[in-house]
Amino acid sequence: MVANVLPTIITRAPQPGLGISARLGAGSYSTVDTGAGAAGGGDKFSLGADAAYSDTDGYRDNSGLEKK
Image 1: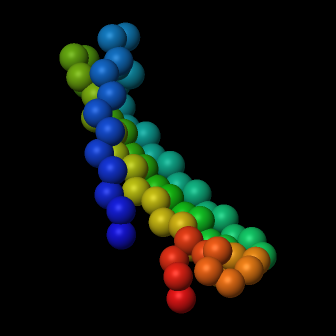
Image 2: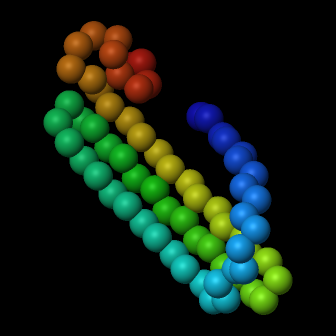
């Protein structure tokens, strides 16, 4: 499992409210790609978080995202 924390500084005014997103993808060779995120803000700041998972068997031996 890999976790990334990427701070982002944006100098424009935040958009108030809450937003959510989700994605789901599938393909050949047992490929799966999923993700979800949420963001919210007020008058002075905003905050967002995302999570994602990807996996594939690949099309040749040992080319998968996770060796099986």
